[in-house]
Image 1 (cartoon, helix red, strand yellow):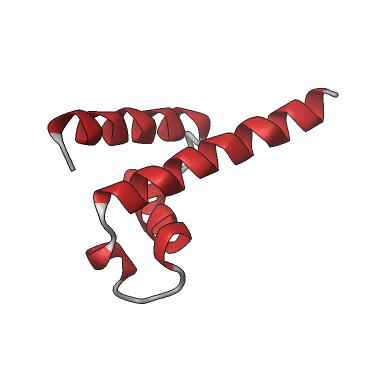
Image 2 (cartoon, rainbow, N blue to C red):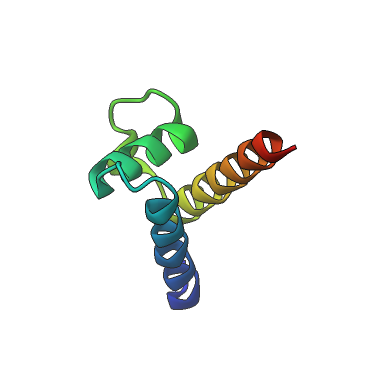
Length: 72
């Protein structure tokens, strides 16, 4: 992962943290690792940055879709 990609991952994690303010950072990371890698106990340790970015991007889209459905 390039420095730019890591910056994007950290920015997206910030967005997710703002969208889910009651979750601690460790919870966000663990949950996104589970999204990326499934229930593998070593998922948090083994997840790659690009997998984590894809999971966070997916989760943000899911949250936006839910909020859009609540408004409609």
